[in-house]
Image 1 (tube, helix red, strand yellow):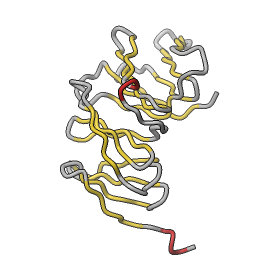
Image 2 (cartoon, one colour; image 1 turned 90 degrees about the horizontal axis):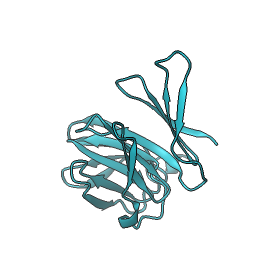
Image 3 (cartoon, one colour; image 1 turned 180 degrees about the vertical axis):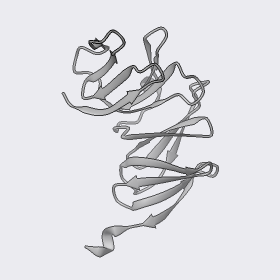
Length: 168
């Protein structure tokens, strides 16, 4: 197993996301207490993000699935049955109280209060590997094929900022 990301919450609990892996580690008692949520090789946790509205929830993207983890009940709710996206969700970001997951040639926008989602096509960009919210209306995305792109959430449009292909 390998680790893709760590998330530390406001209580100091650490969540480990990785290949076939989603774990919660609590350090409050001095020695770590580990709780594993998946014991079989059925889930791949590539990235995660804190819910921008509800501090008790984490959202996690993986291979063809997204799930929401409720810290209070320790329950996991999957959204993957309705997504029909057969790619890995490599990156996540929040802006304007919405959650976005990046994948091959697109973003998935989720309203965390309702679970409603919208697929945003970004043709020919490849995998969206990372994101940085620049201000409250722009996001810098790193794309597999088009380099750096700037995404505008209000219009779901993007523009190429830097494409390094021509330099090689």
